[in-house]
Figure 1 (cartoon, helix red, strand yellow):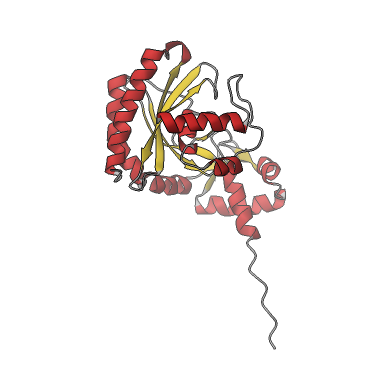
Figure 2 (cartoon, one colour; figure 1 turned 180 degrees about the horizontal axis):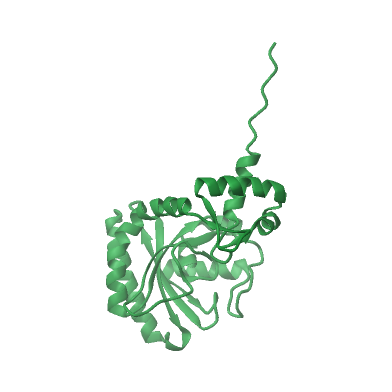
Length: 256
């Protein structure tokens, strides 16, 4: 009787993905030693993967020898995802109008497991917001867009998604899941969410949901501003503008 073949090993694939995933907006350039430290992969093995990634265009060696950065192949693949997001395509024009009408930067955020991801950003003419970039990830529990995305989940799903003690980023950050859950229930009732300097001191944000044809939240549309200029009147007009734009996008996605 022939010997039973062993199951294929995916160890190399997991290592390759771990190496690529070690790059981020906060870590755009890494050395082999950095990657080995972040991934617990032996440095000699990291070097072998790096050679292949550079050859295939997934990574490139920078002008500083020994430092690597994401290559054009990853840029190309990322743009394929970006261009083919239905919600992004539907939201672009309403976001443009909103940014121009209210002189504010507008973001579109979707959920990827326990994080939010900026998939679109529109800035009014003459302004540039540095804290957000398309592709950047944000926490769900301390951002207005994140709270909107959490509001589509059950209490049990939220508890399983987040740690029991949430990291404190500012004195305003909600760090207890039970308190956050009460906040999410209020979001579900109101239909909008806010971040009052919970992610970054001096920065406030409001967000509303975009719903698909089944009534599920497909994305969150948000805008933010300095706390000093984010008074009740300004906040109210931004929420109203966001709600109008989000309803337009939701209708395009088939929401009745």
